[in-house]
Structures are given as C-alpha cells and as structure tokens.
Length: 203
Image (cartoon, rainbow, N blue to C red; front, side, top):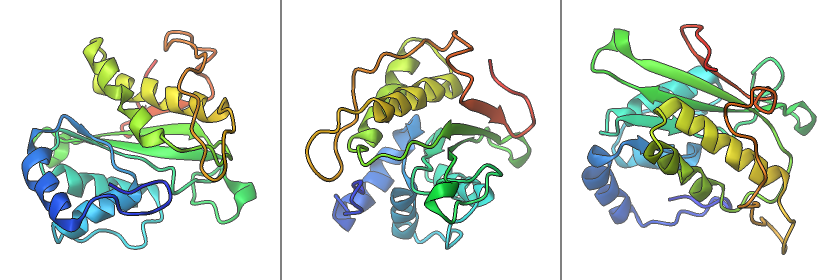
C-alpha cells in the first residue's frame, strides 16, 4: 500500500475495500508503519503518534488485529533502534530492527506478542523487502507455526539486503537468492532473536 519511497500506492477507496473485505479473511497482515497508520486512519482508529517505541508498535498491532486478521506483524524497518532498544536518534546508533507479531485468542489475558530483533543493515538496496517477506506464506505451507514462519522470512529478507547486488540508482533490489542457513543451524541464527513477552525464547 505504501512504497519504500513513501508513496501511497492505493487510492483511499481501494484501502477501504481492502480493510472491509480482505482483512477479515487474512491469516497474517504484514504492514510497515506507514501502511499500518494508513489502515487505522481509514478506519478512524486512533494510534500513538508519533510512534516511537516498542510498546507503541504493540498498540498499533493490537488495533489492526481488531480489524479482522488472525495475526499482525508490524515491520519496524522505518524505526531502527539502538543497543538498548530505544529509537535510534543518529545513524551511528542504529543497531537493530524490531518487528512485532501480535496474535489475539479472544481474551486480553491471552494475547500473544512476539518480538523479532534483527541486526540493522545500512543499505539503499531495500526495494522489494515487503513483497519478499511474503515468503511467510511459503513457510506456513511447509507446516511451520506462525512465529517460526515469520522468523525464517525475516532472515531471508535480512540476507537479501546484506547480499544485494547494488543495481541501478536509488533504492536497488535485494538479492532474492541469498545463500542462507536453515533455522535449525543455531550458530547461523545467533545474531537474531525471537522472544515472547512472557520471557520464553524460541529455538
């Protein structure tokens, strides 16, 4: 809905149709922060503004989940954080990208929030990251649960950015064929983490 450049790709009427007709059928919604705000604005739902913290991202994800998707993954590429997981104020402080997965099971005390932390990769070659994250669907088709499907997809995108061929000018494409280790290789996965808010980690 919103391109890497920040341009809105859908007219508001199409955003309304998407929200009303598709979101109730959605297994997992994966908006970036501008897309999440666009959907909430379209539904006249308030959200933290400016969105500047991990708790803010969780509140945005929870509000979006009320529109119908079973799971919502807020992509934090627009909001890099420093070593202490505070929003980075300087480029030199950008250490991680935080993605937030919110799943609701019908009761406030049974909400499930998973935080994904990935090393920040300074690169102009980020064209196609959102579409490539749709590899979540491939992982679900292979029988993985949602958190591990998301983790595999995040690693695929991270590797794609880190090994991008640097083509063209402006926002170049990521590498869609990176050589990456499987999830079971813990050493290769050690630079990323996936943690539930209740403190339990995933292996």
